Image 1: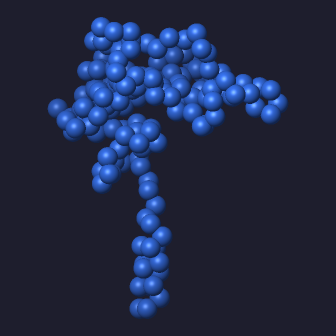
Image 2: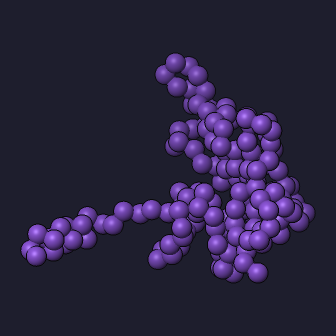
Length: 151
């Protein structure tokens, strides 16, 4: 049984919302997962301070440890832009401990999840998943160009 970390689509038409789940590879996209690991909202929205984190499946507390990692543009969430508008951002909340647990057990992330994990710094050094592109260092490029020119 191959376990994958992938996105399960929720929400309505033209308003997508995804759950990050651990699920058997042969199951359909929206089938019941083994475990829900987080939530991803790809539509940029203004942050709301009144929104409470959603508890995860199997969690007896209101928020699991490591819960609440937000991917932002680096600006404070309530910082107005030059025009006085509030900055909108995509929301990503997940349980880092459980994601690391599933990766240690050998779960393979899908391409979109691998990109999200890479941006968050959860991909260990020396591990390469499909969907992550890291350009080679400049030193290797110079050596490759030098070898082509000498032949």
